[in-house]
Image 1 (cartoon, rainbow, N blue to C red):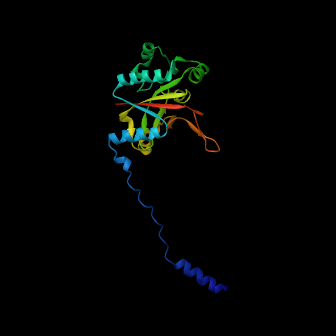
Image 2: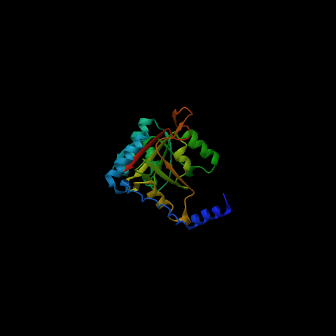
Image 3: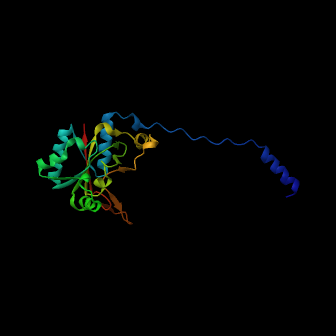
Length: 223
């Protein structure tokens, strides 16, 4: 190609109108955002059950403690460790345990870290916690971890029993993260999303429960 022909082609390319970048299509409206309270509950229960979680509905705190007693009897629980978060603390499970013949531990009972780890991994047959938020679109629970919601209580024992006030249900993940991370000056050190019992797949796709966390997840949906 001669120099003049090359320059002519380059000149035409430079003079050609620049193509406008294609705009991203707008997001379709999420039907989940229009769910009413009954739909939030129904979808949360259906999605969690699909992940082999168990959901019990109760009316109030009195019924929640009665359901806990039923679960303890069915599961053969004699020792549990409980969080002291805003959902669980009002239930006064230490006194409940004395009435039901169940040993109730809390993280605050231990000043020695090794003794605490032995309690959650070796002694407690179940961990009982509250739930900060739950997600209807996937049947997921979310826990904000702090001194009253120690992470090991929900992940170390073989069974996790979580008490979820119905008003803490949200339709989507985004609705939860918008709340949790709204205040950038006061972010939680840890936030855990859990969908069903802990499950791990091997190289052939076989599923194992309880390999890296609770084998059972039982939700008490309160309210």
